[in-house]
Each structure stands twice: as C-alpha cells, then as structure tokens.
Length: 338
Image 1 (tube, rainbow, N blue to C red):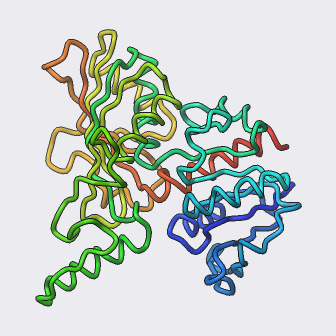
Image 2 (cartoon, helix red, strand yellow; image 1 turned 180 degrees about the horizontal axis):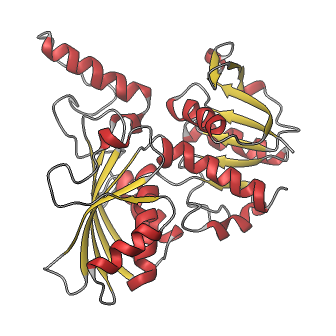
C-alpha cells in the first residue's frame, strides 16, 4: 500500500532534502505533492534522477485525502497550515519550532523515544526537534541508560545551512567578495560569517541565552528526561553543511570509557569513529550527505567524578531535519497507519 504525502516548503533546503530522502529510502508512496508559497508555485523539484514534481501553492491546497504531511516552512506558516492539514485528516510531521513544546504534541527522535508517537492523535501533529538537539540526544540516549545523566554542557559549531539557502549563499558570496577586495555585507547573519564565528543563533532571551540554546535545553528534557540539566552555547561557523558539538556529560553513576564506547556502538544511528591519531575523528565536511550521527574524541573528564567528553557531528539537513522526519513517517506507517 502506498501513501499520499505532501511536502510543505518543498523548494527550501530541507524540503528538497525531504523529497530526496523519501526517494532514496523508497518510502511507499502513491503520490507526493510539493507545496510552497505562491511565488514558488509552478516551479519544479526533483524526485529522484528521473522524476520531477510541480510545486503547488500551499495557501490554495486542499489536504483532504493526504495521509501524511512533512512540513518545513517557517514557524508562522506552520502555525497556520499544519493545523489545517491535521484537521483535514493528515498526520503532520512538523519540522519547525512551532509545536515542539506543545504538551499535546509528541517531540520525536525515532532512535530515542519512538513510543512518544502513540500520542500523535491528540493533535494529529508530530514535532521534529531542532537539528542540534537531534544529534545530541541520539548520542546521549545509550549513555543515559548506562549511568544516568545529571548535567550536559554543550558548545555547538553550526553550519550556515541551518539558516537555509540564504545563509549558505551569504557565506559563499562573502568569501568570494573578500578575495576580490569587496567588503562583506552581513544580511542573513548578525555579523560577517566568512572567516569568522558568530556566538549567536536566533534571538536573545531575558536570561542572556539565545533561543537556540534554550531549545537544546528544553527539547532534551522533553525527549530524554526532564531531570537532565543542559547548558548550551550555540555558535554559527563558516561551514556549508554539518553541525558539530563538543559535549561534556556529568553522570550520577560511575561510567568507564570503554563501557560508553560499547554502548554508543550498539546504538542505532551512531557510528563511533574515534582513533587517537591524526585524522582519527569526523568533521562536518566528512559527514555531509551521510545519515549517521558520528561520535569521536570520547574520553574521561578528569575534573569530574563521573564525567565524559565527546565530539558529535552530523549532517544537519539530513539527520538534523529531513531524515528524522522521514524516519518518523516510516514509524507511523509501520506501527500506526497500516
């Protein structure tokens, strides 16, 4: 049996990746509808090497008869159209921040908390977590089961694709312009991104944290365990694709490095590449286009009684967005909608 799917935000970086991932993983579809804003209507997006989809106007589309919607527009667009699709009977997998902290909407990473999907009928919406949260909780889950996590301190190194195509274009144009002696003009980002790092992602909140840093804390609690304390510093770096995270974890119980390594290796979705030699670790450039969450630089923190350090890298457009959404759709199809 094939499903009728709609992809909202189909012309964006994540939307295109969702469509590509549906094709690559051979998701059982009878029909895929590409939806975007009125200005994008009439464009085409690729579905595999041989097929294209005509983009339709989201505001005019009737969701009746659609089984699932994989949605990745802005939060304001999602606030309007995801409930409309859900009311028409479709299950919406929403990749924006709009519904993540709604107590009636499950926030799901299939390798971490698949049982939360049982609550999807409350709103007919499932939320896809923030990209930086997803890769971190995939790695934290087996460690939490092993020794109970008390506190997480994370510093992120997030690529420009996390800000969409405009962010990637700004990095490219600024880099090219600097070599041509043209002064960089920040537009998408707060400051020059080429040859620089920016310690601000999203808006500042009253306590001095940015909203991205807040998301990592509250989403980890909702997905993994409300008792875990998380403090984050999120930084934009001049990389096109791939987020990296330096993570320090404090545990309630003793944990040995080799125990942690074995637990991580056994966790679905993780590849441990950790050799204490030159090039014995994974970087964002190497993870682009890959589905796995890569863990490297695993070592004991000698300043804590029960502490570990690790380096986590993943393609933010795939596992951090599109792949996770498609995995949710696969789980819905296999366990709930068949």
